[in-house]
Amino acid sequence: MHLIMPFRGLRPAAGQAAAVIAPPYDVLSTAEARTRAAGRPFSFLHISKPEIDLPDGTDPYADSVYAKAADNLALLLRGGVLQRDAEPCYYVYRITAGDHVQTGLVAAAAIPDYDSNRIRKHEFTTVDKENDRVRQIEALNAQTGPVLLAYPDARHIDALLEEAARGAPDADALADDGVRHQLWVLRDAAALSALTRAFDALPALFIADGHHRSAAASRIAASRIASSRTAAARGLTGQDEDNANRFLTVIFPHHALRILAYNRVVRDLNGLSTDAFLDRLGEDFAIERLPTGSAPASPRTFHLYLPGQWYRLTLRPGRIPVDDPVAALDVSLLSDRVLTPLLDIRDLRRDKRIEFVGGSRGVMALQERVDDGAMAAAFALFPTRMDDLMAVADAGQVMPPKSTWFDPKLADGMVSHIID
Image 1 (cartoon, one colour):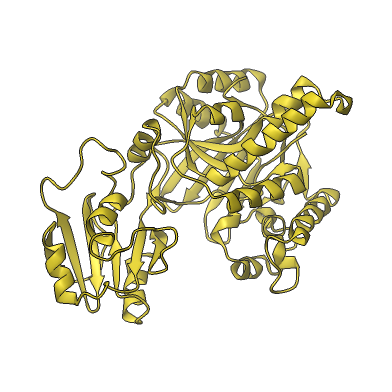
Image 2 (cartoon, rainbow, N blue to C red):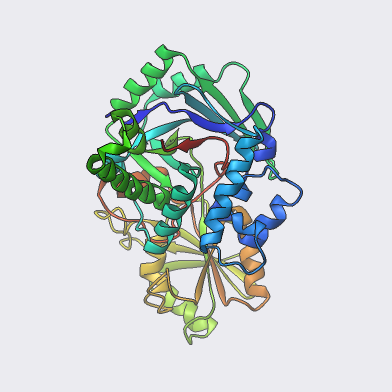
């Protein structure tokens, strides 16, 4: 089995991409999704967040929600808003956000390579979130949320993608957040083969975002393939099995992906006064006052906001582990040197005293959370780097929760993968 393969993508019909594409399902609340989809009957949010079409207060994990997703997908198919390509294709996908441009490949990746960790993971998943994605995929018989992957340095692949994106795109849409999404459909047999061979030669791919989607795809593949092997009357072919054993991905060069900081705000100082907290911080950090709020300009430096004042915290020499890629991450250093020993915040997933703010909101959003009295302190971090993420994945380790915020986000609805 090849690492990646072309597939018959389900995508917006000509001229419909702008009406269809939507933010990923997991970055909007139900209320936000309902607002974003208002007046947009073709928005993919009706499929990815179908509770918006059900009465207020509907449990987003109710059976009726997944059934509504299937109904809404069928409606767009019947109306010709979404169409499926007749033959397997690759799709070159370009995202432009301001002066940031990243060009990648939409492909069906091999689940056996995910299971064997050739497609590297760096996060734990939770059963509840996996179950949600399993039910969504099963209801639609399709993977509609692409998994964001990165490939290591391979300039010949970069060149192949740039060459494929030279002409006019098959889809060109400006999302409501001002981000431009473009798609080129690649049908040429020689170009398809060249890309397949080039990816086969790579040692690994890396999951950047989408661990629950990939885990859910793996579970469904195992179930379907087991069923096909014990129920020959279904008439499934080897090609069917191969298709069921793949998952929807968009793969970018690692150097093109942009990671923003995932900042932290805490509700209290664990009984410490401001002066006592600063004194304790001074054991591990050099502390200096800042005239205004800003993001750290380099790793291993943190900007702290306490009521009325910003500070720069710089780790003192000898405080950074050199032989552990997880412990050396900025998010780990903050936890190990501040959150756990000083504030007694030990479980980032469950402790209600800490919240996380994506870097796209800026540092002033952190200051506002403290100034309005909701939080006692805010920490602005330097973004995790792709090289750090890949080092953790290569070591078979796991990143701490809320380590990365990839921006810009992929658009749901640009291309989906039907599981035949």
